[in-house]
Image (cartoon, rainbow, N blue to C red; front, side):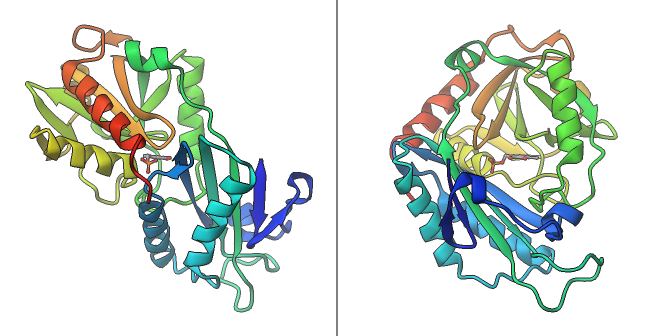
Length: 281
Ligand code: PLP
C-alpha cells in the first residue's frame, strides 16, 4: 500500500491525520475511488472532475492544485509498481479546533492511497449475484460523494447478513441506486436507470454504460422505476468502479428473468471490458 499525505509520500504506519480533522469529526470531506487496469487509469479525469464539482457543492476550496493531485495518483501507482490497482482519494476541509462553522485558517487534508486491486470473482459476472432492497435513508444530496457513508455501510452490512452482494435503495418505492453502485433494469429490451439528479451519485461507470448503450444502439431512458418494476424486470445489473458491470439475478429472494445474466447485460459487460483494455485518461 502506497500512501501520499498532502502530496508527500509517507510510510503506511506514519500516515496519520489530526484528531481534529474535519473529515474525522464531521465527515466534512469528499472521496473518489479510481481503478487502474494494467497500469492505465480508467477515466481518472472524470473522477477528478466530479471531485471538483462536489467541492463546489459543499463550499470546499482546494488549496492545492488538482494537477498535483493527478500527478500524485500516478506516482502512487508507479511507486507500488501496481498493474491492477485501486486508488483512493480523500480531501477534507482540514483540521481546526472543533466547531461547526468552516475554519477561517486551515488547509485541506488530501490523501491518496494506492493498493493492488481486489477484483470480484469471475463467477459473479458469469452467474450473477443477489441483492436485497432497503429504504434509502440518506440525505437529499447523494450526488455529492462525501465520506459520510453510514447509511451505505448499514445497507451493505444488511446485504452481507442476508447473504446478498448488494443492497438496493428505494425512496418511497422508487429505486434510486445501491449502497456503492448504480442500478439498471432491462424490460422488453429497454434499459432504465434513475436520472442523474440529487437522489443518486452520478457514477462514472454509469456514465460509461450510457455511452456503451448509445454505441450499441440500445434504447435507454434515464427515468425512475419502482420496486415492482425492479422485481418484474427481465434483467438487472449494477455498476461501480470496483463492481464494474455486475449482473443481479435475485432480488429479495425473487429470481429475476431466467435467473442467469441476460443478453443485454452480457453485451454491455463485453463492451465494458474492451474499454478496460484501452482507456488511459
Ligand atoms: N453509487 C454510490 C452510492 C457509490 O458509492 C458508488 C461508488 O462508490 C457508485 C454509485 C458508483 O460510482 P462509480 O461508478 O463512479 O464508482
